Image 1 (cartoon, one colour):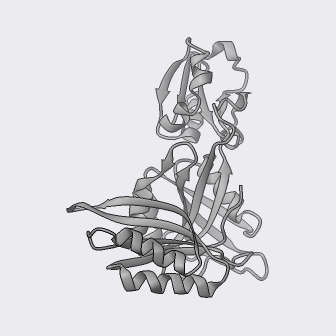
Image 2 (cartoon, one colour):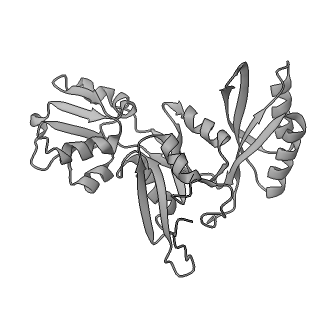
Image 3 (cartoon, rainbow, N blue to C red):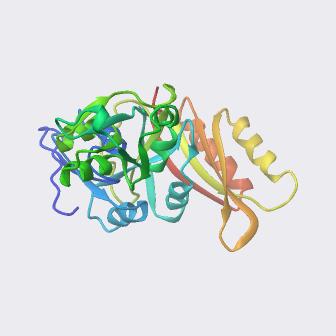
Length: 293
């Protein structure tokens, strides 16, 4: 695939992973958390938007993608659910990353020099208390957290800081002026490692799979959703999440996304079979090991 070399037995494996955003971002950190201990050489391929990320995956230009699927404060990333359903891909792993925001500037810049703060809108919204305590800051949204630090450093800005992960400071030579400026400590993002279905498993799972993501559609009649969930329950799987997304071109019809936990592969397979008998569409988005906080 793209000339990539993957020799797992000798530890000489090389993987190219696409992410939305720049190197040094939370997606970069999540990638390292999932693969860093098992891969000798990990190349991060930054992309502007999520559609570009998945386009590179489908074209075989990268080995896989790492995308956020849900944040504990802001909820699900709807666009990424749509891409998982639309494309012939599967989820192979997940990770939970504690989100830590830091005020990062160029070396030599002091906190009192800062007049402007840049970051992704979601990051800015998660640092409202800190920003409110500094009314002298002009707060400006930017396309990416790590990208804000990259911009500050590339342009040599001495009155501007970015809010980003600490990794961004190391990546671009910035300095953390103040760490932990987020409002809530219990701020986690769940990431998925995604690969084309036609490709073999990226890396063997270190532990047995115990979680499965599914998408399904049912007839628009009273009781059909309840019946679908009852079939899952009857097979002994534990429903941990349910999400609905509208069906384009079919007003008031929805695709349902669920995550379930299971204790044996047989239970997972039975749950899929039972749901398939009831629903008009079922897609297994992936089976993987559940991440622990």
